[in-house]
Structures are given as structure tokens and as C-alpha cells.
Length: 235
Image 1 (cartoon, rainbow, N blue to C red):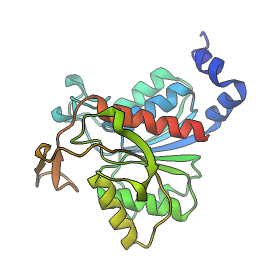
Image 2: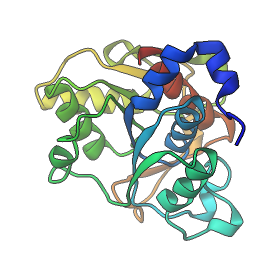
Image 3: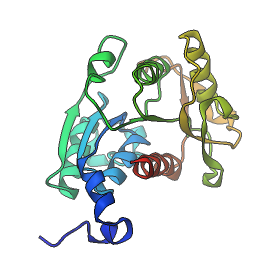
Image 4: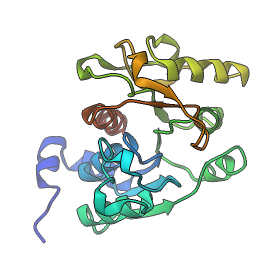
């Protein structure tokens, strides 16, 4: 097989490619943001990946999620993504965990010495528990904030969590982490655009969610690319 990494190695060089091939990255949440982050990491040459998500594809995912097609409705997101990632790199060392993360299983998961953690969880309790546990253990992590109810990709930025604004998810995460006794710098991807509150509706039929937010196709994808770029540059 022709070297499919040739173009990346031409840009980054052999030494940096070897670093990527030896890295083990954890991606938690492989919906709208996380699946794109995972794919960009694998296409860049990351050699070992663990993906975590218990959700199945729903029709409302099709407008924005990499794994969501009419042909994949009701299928586990991790299974779909795993097949796709192995088709990109057949030598990829991939661990698939179709589980919901919570206070009980996050500590055990983080016993593994990941080179980097990508947090693409969109519910507060598991998100903050993952962040808190990772930071308490000195693990490298970057977190995605809210891509919903926004449309302007030119306002997507990197920042410290404590310097974000116009982001409801950031505010909720800050509040929860403060209650947990954590106020350390945390790199995040967020969007400075004001959210369109007309695009947010309350819901009572989704696990761990109190509202549903309108989304557009390209925003979560760009968030995912930002996450992947950050990890690759830091490695």
C-alpha cells in the first residue's frame, strides 16, 4: 500500500509523525464535535485512540454529525466511527467504549496514561467530573464548549475557560467546577457569538439534558477541527 501519510509527513517531518504514531488520545463524546476531532486526529497520524460514547444515531443528528446518516439510524455511534477510523488507518490501535461516563467509572478510565484527553461531552455532570479528575491527576485535556445556537465560524476561538463569554455551557462548567473546588486554567474551544435564544427549547425526554438547541452543519465540525489541531500542535 502506498504511504497514505506521505503528505502529512512532508509537512510535519518524520520526527513529529513518529510522535503522533506513538500517542494515545482519549476522545469522550463522538457526536457532532467529537467524531470530527477523532477523525482529524487519525487522519493526521495518531496511532492509538480510545473513543467513548453510549449514544445511538437519531434522525435529528443527521444535520451535523459525521456518523449520522439515514442508513445508520439507531446504530451505536462508536461502532460507526470505529469502522470509519479503521478504514482510514487499518493499523490504528482503537479502543471502543459504548458507555455513559459518570462519577463511578471516570476515575477507572483515567487510570490509563493518555497523552491527551479531548472532552466533547455536552452534559454538565460527566463533563465536569471528567475535567476535574483529569486536572486533579495532571493530565492534559482540552474541552469543547457550546456550538449550539450559533452560526459564525469566524468567532470560534481558543481560550482559558475562565476567560470565555457569551457561552452558556462555559458558564455552567465554571460554576460546577468552582463548587467542586477546581479553578485551574483549562484550554477550551468556544464561540464569542451571542447565542440565539430563540433556537433553544426545553425538553424532558433526553438523558441528562434539560434543553434542545438548534444547530447548523458546519459549527460542530469546525469545533472538532479546532480540538484536533490543538492536540496535534501540543504533541
